[in-house]
Image 1: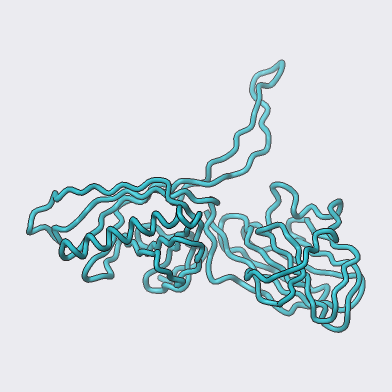
Image 2: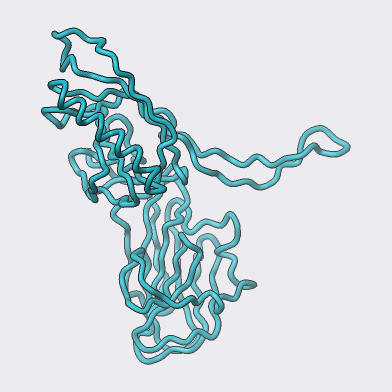
Length: 318
């Protein structure tokens, strides 16, 4: 069965890749990465076998702000948000001989350490049969143990050369995002477009480009999620012909790139946040979603000039 966003992150049936640094998309490798397998063995000389994953499909740690109800029974509960969560991988490093096992165990420790040395790292989870699509999330190693005991005899299968390990990872966000990203491009001013989030969590990885398509533009731009009933309003924006307003929900930022590139790639830019009408822009209020699970109708409108707009997003799941 092909892995699709509706499945959520795969567990023991998936291939889990731990990477130091921030290269999150499946298939993006660097020198600080290792593969871990649950139900499958894909290497002939050495491999990392996962026996148990704790916390992978759990929810994030949550705020719980409350106080006693004065003069009555119970408590007053205040709004709170989900934070990160801890995931623990338990398994074995296996090799067909001692040197191969030692080398792979060293690579696993290095990948775990690099999530600290480089501030962050990532885990990507894919179906081994379709390794270029799947979920990813940012992590940092908070604990790693690897016992060195030769507990198995020479006739053990698949190999006597095995070392158990426990790898504790802290996810910065309890959600996983799906790669590759989805896109709806070259929409016209006033078009309503339905964006589908096939995961079970709200989307934060959402990006808009609003482009002055024919001649310069000077006026108001409103970006709306009609399903959630929220918007962002920018007043008195000036865009030369071909220039754009980039809206990045992950950073809560609006910029005008000096060099146009598809989001979420970074480009040098000018800050456009002074043009945001805060009183008319509740979409970036605390606790508001970028996109909710399921279908979301979005629209970009203006009061002057011709605009085209594109939007990019990631299916998102717990």
